[in-house]
Amino acid sequence: MADDRSQADRPSLSRQMLPAVHGMLARPLSSYYLLIASCALLLLIGLTMVFSATSVKAFAENGNAFTEISSQSVYALLGLVAFWICQRLPATTLRVLGRALLGAALLLLTLLAALTALKSAGVVERIGPVRANLNWLYFGPVSMQPGELAKLGMVLWGADVIARKGPELGHWRELAMPLFPVIGLLFVLVGYNDLGTMLVLLALIVGLLWTAGVRLKVFGALGVLGLAGVGLLIAAASRGAGSGTSGEENYRWKRLTAFLQPLEDCDTTSAAGQYCYQLVQGRSAIFEGGWFGVGLGKSALKWGWVPEAGNDFIFAIVAEELGVMGCTVVLALLSVLAYTGFRIARRSVDPFRRLAATAITTWLVAQAVINMGGVVKLLPITGLPLPFISAGGTALVVTMAAIGMLASFARAEPDAARALNARPTPRWVRLVWAPLPPVPPPRRPGTSRPSPQKKAPAGSGGGRRR
Image 1 (tube, rainbow, N blue to C red):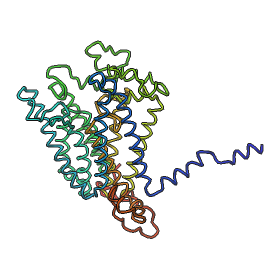
Image 2 (image 1 turned 60 degrees about the horizontal axis):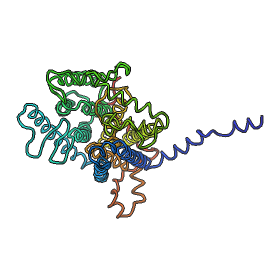
Image 3 (image 1 turned 90 degrees about the horizontal axis):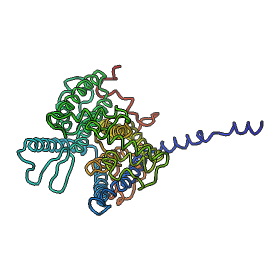
Image 4 (image 1 turned 90 degrees about the vertical axis):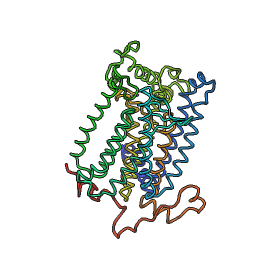
């Protein structure tokens, strides 16, 4: 009885750990370190898995197993440079940069659409060194995806416009100009060739408007318009949109509904079964992996069986080689990234930083959920890469730039800014890494950390209507 009583009085392990975790999260720079740690680990896992998933195919096609990983490593270095630059930029510069990025993205998307239309009409396939192929623009040997640039431009420009409008955003006229026309144009230019990127843009904009406190009836109207737009883009595939062909079977509809078909009914030898092939092979890779996987580099289905094994379906290779445990690690790191991004948004006093942080986090979370949901057959396959993990140059560089902005916002949190300015790092460290954030205004007596949640939402004039 005495032993039982002593064990009952002894605090449990979870009760001992919770105060320690809470203490760590209460430190001024916790958001910054969580962001850096989770993203660095995701980038390391991504480079490892890209090499594992592409080495066999690269050796078979080029005689060099390091072809794809060499290219991805170069993009990772460019991404680190973009991270470093964006971490150093103040919010005022980012607001100006947003207009330039969105303008450049719209011009590139227009060029992409024009070249695609000219190519489909048989007029011309390229203009000098510039040519187009679905979602990619090629400038000689250099390729890029304008849709990825549009995400970052929409984050910064949208956050700037909404922050400037403030309480006036509650009026339809303020929402309509200039936000909705630009969003509509962007959806048409992106969605005609890339429905997946358009869905991520839609999620990003919903995150922006929700953070601004826009009324719920606006979301209802946007939902109806969004569904109508998606329906039109699906129908446009029969007219040649994306990789569709006029008069042929609507590949978008088949691809979006393939996940509803039971795997045992997928006849991959038939014309209709080709849309199930990627799902069947992806699920086979997951089943082969089990709890602990077959071992890093030992996947059998990456030998030409899983389509886009290094890109859209790299999560299936992670499941096969590292098993459920490896997938859990990736999910945990993405969850930490999501928590940290929304934490930064909640702690930011500046409306622009709060809106931009929410939009970036919503974008990355939505893209990860859509990608992994498609691989495990819970959502349609849209061709979106898994952030940090999938191969892809423009996507990785743009994602790293967005993380650099989040890091800048984390350093500008009131408590973090005070801590950094109270004990400033040496001048050479500030020159090499990041400058000191501006000192926030002093707290009023009797108040704790500033809470942006106590402020009236920007777009509702005092609260969101329920």
